[in-house]
Image 1 (tube, helix red, strand yellow):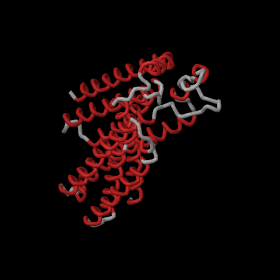
Image 2: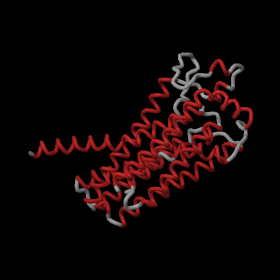
Image 3: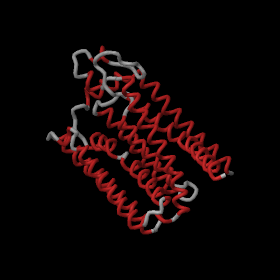
Image 4: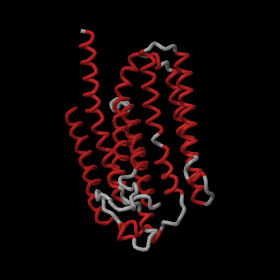
Length: 308
């Protein structure tokens, strides 16, 4: 029974990846045309879909990163036998500092500096997403301290393993996207279509740009950021909470797809930029657990040697 479920899982993953890869290959040949159609039909239109999920891609990664930091510090505090009062105080201070830094960093974006219909939508959207993030941070802390999970060694030993998986997935995704952006230097659609001869400046996916018009289009950072929400699945036991797991899975993928569409619609990315970001993030999600298990085994072996 277990083996059948495992096979079904990998069949579904295989089908999903085949669809995404097929889309990626198709977009390689249609990238320029898709962006040209966007320019001609919807580039200058302001609407909630494209701008709100553009902001989603900017902000939502805070949830998995905060969760990772929160649980990692709880585990370390427990190891050092820090008192509960100090744990709660320090975690609250970390949350406040994190939120202040995020808000101050956000104020450097253009959508906080200029006033027009598009920026108004983006500011309102950003505030909504920030509220959701803040509500999550408060709920996570409140539930943890109410249930006294910060003193529960069994819980902390289980959650640190899940935290390692999530940290690996997020770290690999975020680092890879930045490295690849700098390697390929692909110009963004809005940059090339602002010139008289956009076709001459167009670069294909994986084509390294050696010209002076280098940018950071490939792959999409916003889409990768949205995909980091998949890391939250590590914190839910599928066998015990199938409904929660499936709900988060669906919500995460809806966020990823809508963020990808929004980035194409505002001419920030070509279709291959967002599709590759999805494939890459998904691959890291699948690889995180095997990599994490190997790291944990090595740590355990070292500990056994030192104690022995």
